[in-house]
Amino acid sequence: MPLFEYRCSACGHESEHLVLRPDERVVCPSCESPRLERLISRPAVSSEEGRRRASRAIRAKNRSTRRDQAEAEAARIRAHDDE
Image 1: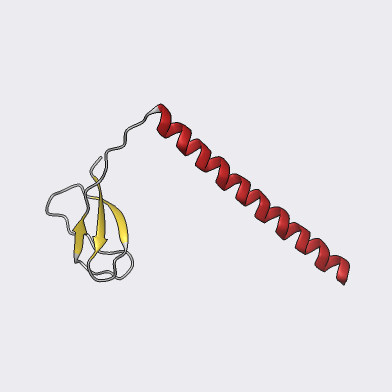
Image 2: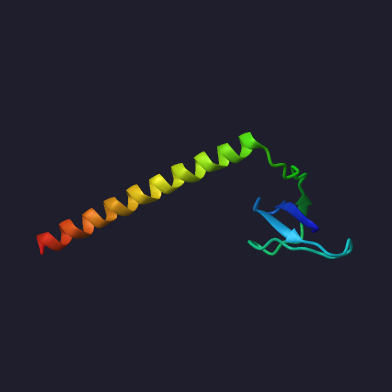
């Protein structure tokens, strides 16, 4: 699939675009400037270590999300008790 990464020269926003034809023009989704610089993408390679690293990152993010949700719930309960 011809999915390319670009950086806008005007605002610096990075985005991905599906480009089906070489003459197809793409614009920045942030500022709509046509001055995009195509970035060199790393190939997607799967390895056991990469999967472990991704799994650890996901678990850490989930722990953080659960902690934030628990703190928000505790704050709601405290606010309700104060009323």
